[in-house]
Every structure is written in C-alpha cells, then in structure tokens.
Image (cartoon, rainbow, N blue to C red):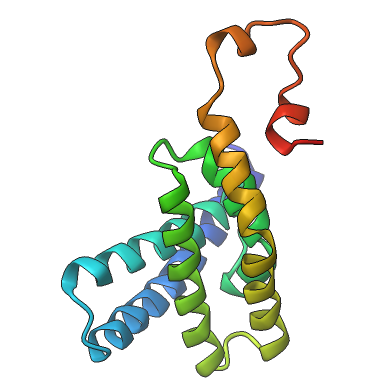
Length: 158
C-alpha cells in the first residue's frame, strides 16, 4: 500500500468519525420532529451515502464541501454509481441532504451563504438531474456498443 493511499485512508477515517457525530445529531433532530423510524432511517441513509461515500470518493472532503457538490452528486455520480438511483431517489436524496444541511447551518458547521447555494442548486437544477436520470434509464446495449454513440452528449444533453 502506498503512503498516499494510507494517508487518504487515514483522512477518510477521521472524516467519517466526525460525520458519525453529525449523523447521530441528525437522527436525534428528526426524532424530535416526530418522524417515523422508517422516514428517519431513509433520511440518515441518504445523507450517510452523500457525506461518507461521495464526498470521500475521489479525495477526502468534510461536510462543509457538500454544499457545493450537490449537482455533481445528484446530476451525475449518483445516477451512474448507485444501482438504486431513480427520479424518486434523486428527489428523496435532495430533501434529506437539504434537511441535514439545515441542521449543519443551525449548528454553525456551514454558513448561510453555503446553505443558500445548496438550496438554490437543488431548486434550479432538479429538472436537469431528473432528465439525465430518464436518459440514463433509457440507454440500451445498442447505444453503448455503437462506436458513434457519444455518452457525454447523450447523458448531459449537450
């Protein structure tokens, strides 16, 4: 194992330990709101995947970075990497992440400008993300094995 990889693993472990505290706080806040256990588990699971898998996928990033990565996550990575991705799951993730970051704002972990950026990105880009999900779902083997098929153009609609 390389030193770089060991350092990456160490940083991810440290971030995930901190994230567990945030997830526990999030669970507690949702319980205080009287949500059902199923709803709470869904929100926590969605946020856990975002902050512990996506934010640490390429490089270790703490939760503060998450306010600026939502489009990359819900508009691309989640669609391609999570086999359970769907339009409903994109909406569910957006709602969960927004609730989580509202708590992070209340706790002073993120600032108002970052939180507002997250909310605006969700509002402004949701239709694009759902369109990409629909295009991704409609891919066929014929598309993928056609040497003239441009996945980037097809997926991003550019």
